[in-house]
Image (cartoon, rainbow, N blue to C red; front, side):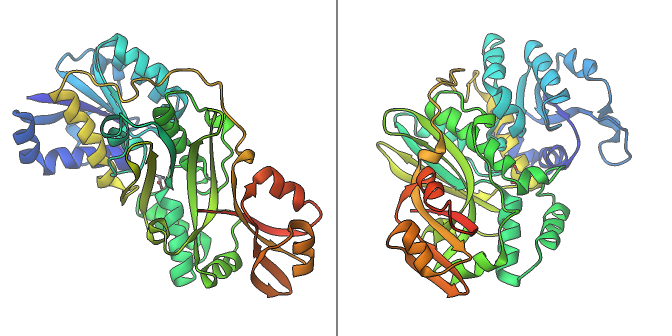
Length: 397
Ligand code: HSE
């Protein structure tokens, strides 16, 4: 019998306990022995199906030699960081969905895991239930990865979909996403692009083998989007999506950012709706591959956690980020990344043309919506300095 502990009993922790119970037969068949949850660390004891497993003392888990894997679902970087270090030092594998901790301390925790000959695995930290980190580090390991971009936050994609499809208000759509268990405990991390930012950092760390620090990455969310831009974009054949993007720059540097983009409706990313996420990876040998699935929620995220749990129990230690070094140099300001830009200005087509030369007009009704040629953000900001800019978004492709 293999035994695990779960730290925290929120959405993901509860999902893991449910999958262990509900899929017991498949898990036993694949592991060759039954798996059970021995302990659940909580701050406050609650009645319910896991009451008998609850403890509020991490030391009992740390000292329990029967527990081979600890699933950390506390979130944040305080207690989660301390307990992760202690569990790894005690020779236990640690599996997590905690993107903040992985983005900020992942490299250090992987080193500690390696030293103790155990795993620190975090498939669930990016893309919820979508297997993407394992394919990136294993199946695509012979490629030089040049770019990754994707819809990395289920909550904001759900909100945007509701706004476009039913004209829902932002606040109502956010409340629905919270009720469905998609949003973070503090949903500002979702709507301000911080959650997607942490995920693009993890993808960039693994893809480029170097540290991309969250504090270096500009993260823009969806709070400033107006329904007007959503409609102008739609009429012109685009959907607005919040994308995280990291890429290798000419000259060898690397960069990353999160921002809302206009996505042409014929691009597969444009039709990724509701809580679904999609991640596109461009590799030097494989070309572009895309991963798609539910990006948040109890059971999808638990599915990804459980794959790491079972892998830890079945195989000798694997480190997700082999080749991920702590080197944070070589980060290039993403203002140097060229794309087309959508602008909506209080002004005429003449004003737009005087600033940018030839532009593609999308709307003209007192305000002017237009697309520029492909230019770096730095240049787009310089050229629009004298315009009264109401909205500015990047365009994908
Ligand atoms: N709040 C996150 C999201 C959860 O909405 O994508 C999954 O990481």
